[in-house]
Image (cartoon, rainbow, N blue to C red; front, side):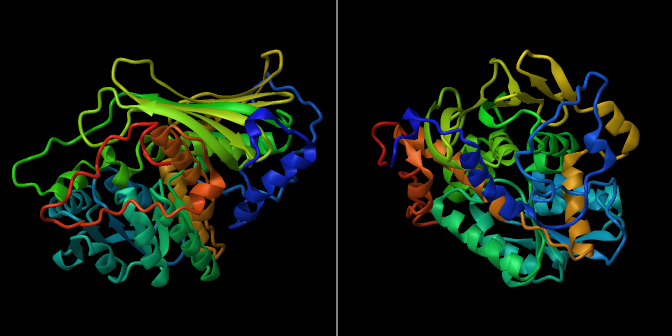
Length: 466
């Protein structure tokens, strides 16, 4: 591969070529931006800008507080832990005439716990014959009469679940990330094509795409507010996340499944499972696709599993632009969740995991555009992007204007994987090599009995196979 780290081509033609990717995956579904998306504070300055891409060539979701009324939609939830429980409530808050009718998980207690919560908080009864348990429970749920599959299982399982849902003509909401290895990437891409051919709607948990401040930012950047993209940096540095201590009687697989966020084969590691939000923001807002990644990371104080707790990655995009990615899950260190994009005319800044300031500055550091959160709250009752992504899904289904986000999210997912593999091996990784690789993280003897745990070790860069 030509060494893009030694040169940088920032021509207008090069930029437009790379942004074609976003155009092919973005012109889906209907709806225009609300008036709020162009709102700005009094310090905004109007300047003539050359659009990076013409309006209408990229997707802007319609984000009302509640989806339009229409046909009843019945959903089932796969993975009934914290995120699955949250997604169930988000779906119910997104529209009238939507219902949760089935639940599935590898284990019985999270199914019953979510069923109890639905009964107590929403007066929804999930009968015993709609509560499915086991590794194949996703099939039973998909076949149970649902219209929508809400998949919040550990990421390793999502390609298989997605494939089965589309085979059976179900719309999907899939949490991020969508896969953890190259085999999963190719499965998701193939399934996404099938979903599009069947006019099925697929929304993913990359919440920035349904956060009004970020949607408004996309319009500003595409309209040329910061000029051509020259670089950027994204950060997701937070405290240590949850883990489970192994209990007597748990098998090897049960332990890993209950502690899934800490095992690379199940979660994809923190750069995929959490930091994908930040990486995705840069890729989506710029339309640039990654070509290579050089990274390092380490494991300092993680309490279980074989994941790292920090990564630092230098990405090179197709047109030679570099952007830096940093993530960390470590108590007692500085927290920072923020994203920055630099252009020839100014910079875009977004702070906070959800909410926070979103603005554009000129090259002298003056704020020339700021998203008005106060105005959003004055004009909208619903400001939670976790709900708004379901609002958009329901609207796209009811209006028969299908949205297919899986192939778009797969680009950000693969970028995060490139950073992970570079850090694990100490070697530069490329899009071309990794997408075509045979990487399959499926355990050789996955079962609920005794497993060979020797493959689940902490990677050591410079010694692992590249």
